[in-house]
Length: 414
Image (cartoon, rainbow, N blue to C red; front, side, top):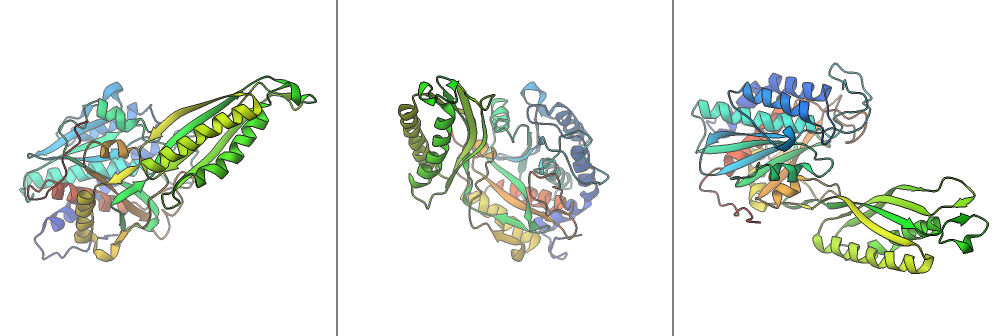
């Protein structure tokens, strides 16, 4: 299905972008289906990197590989300003539960968050810009860097690419995330807070163990853990302005080996999410006080550890406006919809957005028969008519960002 609404009589950049995007549809489907059939978990994306580097070589270009041969980037075009088009490539430890010709061939691993589509659309945007450059169709000097990062799900891939040099010389960045709540042919845009910052934490409780009939001779780590959860759920939501969202959830609890033994060790793991730095700081301060209070009450030793963290993603206003304008030119204003509230999910594109002005948009992937299953579920899939749309919006936004007459904030020097 062709979702583009560009007037064929209009000799515009949008017309050229949409024409080439439609022409690459079969190629984008082939790339996405290969990635979907052979997913790799975070920190293990070596074969995926090799495959994508091979696709780059088919464009008569040479990819730069990131450290540990995981992740890659390639520059396309020329110009004073360089815009990164970022996609991610890692999959999730989920067993796929549907029967189609491109199902995952890796037991217990699937692309349940759409990273196969993210990588494909980013590469597709590069293909569009390269074709337009060769045909002299670019409206001004345009240089983009297609950046395909590993390990987004573990919030380590963005920093991995930065340390590998993938952002050196980059002035701005654009990206997308698939959205099964939006129809294929639509995108969602939002300036400012886009996703929450997240800390994945572990809390350990250690103390004297003993017989379950004599708890007074123990420090009862199980009781301390239960008290911690109850008090955290009560205190954290009340420690900061309710207009700045934050949420704490405990998803894993362990401790003890027998019903009649109070153990010496127990632990829990969970996530703390907040849209602003001030809300996150308030929550962390509250939890530090809670740790000391529970220690004093129960006598056990409590240790807080952060296992994984990502900052909040803040979409740059100028880059978001260019994405919105590009989307309207390609899809019509009725298909470029505002996102009312930030997501409480985390996104490690935020590390890139801390370094350069950047923005992400939501790409609708829901069709009549496929694409409505939620993210991170065994039934997740996409309506592949969304692939050329994502590639086109990324390409058009990157071209717009390269316009020398457009003012963008300067990249961070830190």
